Image (tube, rainbow, N blue to C red):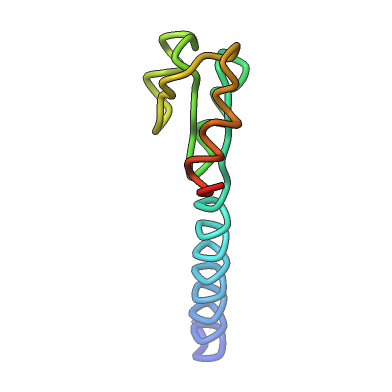
Length: 86
């Protein structure tokens, strides 16, 4: 392999690592809310995942936070008020 090729591969690897770091930083800023199996992929992707206390058990197992409130008790607005200190 030529020196130029090796240098270009190192540059591309460094650039890819930079973009991965940027993507992870953005991902960590995402808050996702969900209670059903259809929400699992989104909840796993988000940096902060929240489910209501009446969510499906398999959903509660994968989220980072299980709320003390249910869907009917406005768990999302209560979480955001506490999280954002509103």
